[in-house]
Image (cartoon, rainbow, N blue to C red; front, top):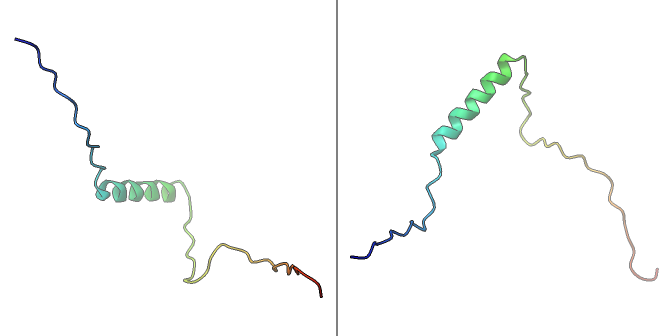
Length: 62
């Protein structure tokens, strides 16, 4: 009788549930605060982008 080889599954393993991620983020935040870190509260609608004046380029004769 010939030996039969079992082919490995081609499906990828499922990612870890989001609960683990949330727990690890909470642990990281706690460690950050415990080490003396500070969390800043940013108002809604405010971004970190700085806006510079745009350059007006003319393509053609005036």
